[in-house]
Length: 344
Image (cartoon, rainbow, N blue to C red; front, side, top):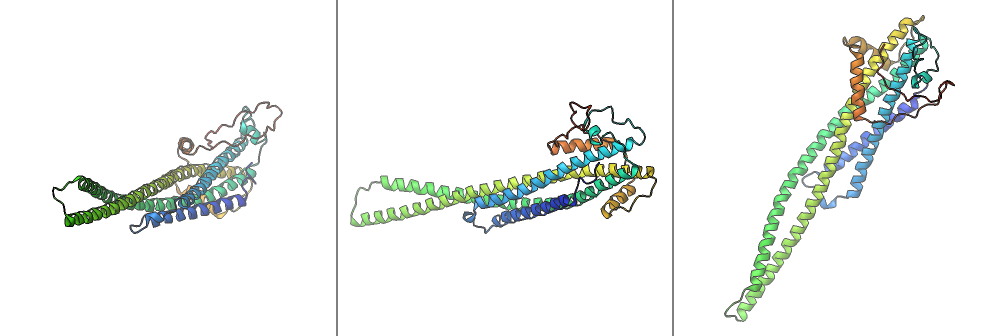
């Protein structure tokens, strides 16, 4: 059963990982904000350092997301096992026709309603912790997504301005090249010392103007390339934040319907218990209170859970956990676990 499968240190580690991911995202966003300022020096950007910072932030977030997704799957499996034990209170053969994962999971044994309730309370305690973390992650990601969009818009405005300056510099350089060519190929019918001096002075001045124009054109092109690279980094970071918001949404939607299922199972197990249930942890009490206050809780649970699980699978392709060793001598080749929406 579920008891002991979710030690508090694992939830604490997940909490710290989320905090680290949020700090990393905030630091990466601050770096992008600094470079998007109109007065920022594009030539001073250390791209290897900045991109390493972005990569670390994305890595922390991805690790947290994947671990939460895996935990949601694990909670789902434990809930199905608890539900099967509940069904065996009324039908001892429930699940025994199957050679699959859940049969081995519950060891073909029957649990008392009190034990089932304790396991479900533990599942709900973990669910409450995940609900708090997902509730913090969504507005955090949404805020930084809006801020990064504003930074990207500033970069787009600066790029347009730089494009105009680059076009103007290119036209001036082309004009100076044409004048230099004309000056070099021009012939004068009558020349004297004074005319030669004037011509040489004009040639030198033209050469200096052309050299300055070439330097400016090269500088503008370098800034343009730097700006495009910075915009690419910003766009990639925005994509990560956007996909992060979508992932949090589907995980929160799955968790919500799973919590409904667990609360309903807890209530059903308590009804079959001969003793009065113990006081619930604060987080679990809140989930139960929300369930009782929701008039639609439990309505079309099977269909809603199936839809949430399908959306979860599409968005977060988590590799299934390694299959557990068989505990039954009758099972030579255990069947693969089947994720089926469980109902009471």
